[in-house]
Amino acid sequence: PYNVLYPGTSETTKVTFPTTQTYVADSFDGNAAPSYGVATVNNNVATVTLRPLSAVLRIVLNGTSTITKIVLSGVGDKSIAGKFTVNFSTGALTASGSNASSITYNIGTKTLGVNDTYFYITVPARNYTEGLEALVYEQTTEKYMKLILFQNGKDLKGGDIAEFKAVT
Image 1 (cartoon, rainbow, N blue to C red):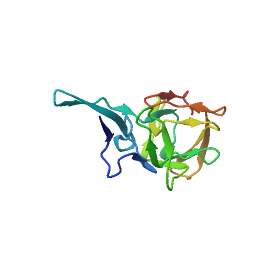
Image 2: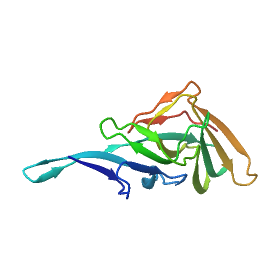
Image 3: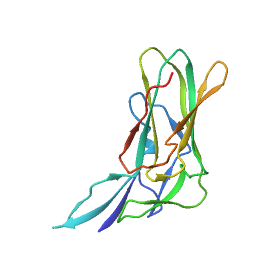
């Protein structure tokens, strides 16, 4: 069998979750969602099924503000960006090397309205025992709104989508 990482990397067992992600309408930043798989060979034909190593947080906002960025942080200094070693048997991730406890999700400028606006941020699939927090920055004043996510902790699996109620 062959181990496979997507996107490709020069390291055979490590993936990188970026410290910066970019807003994509109705989706997530594809550069922030690595996958893994184990290829099998049968009659000289290799087959692989890729499995996600990230979970997606869907943050829902509405109102009249213009939002520029969201800074997502792991509470208790939990690594949510940087290099992670992949266990190809289980898909488990282990922080390795110099990691970061925050992700900056750059939006540019997005003016909210009466209807909900969705923001999708990927995080490594792992147990966030102390939760996450998000600071949502407003353009005019650079003030932020603080959101507490998973105050009682949450074990996120690859492919999970964690949805949150709309916040104004």
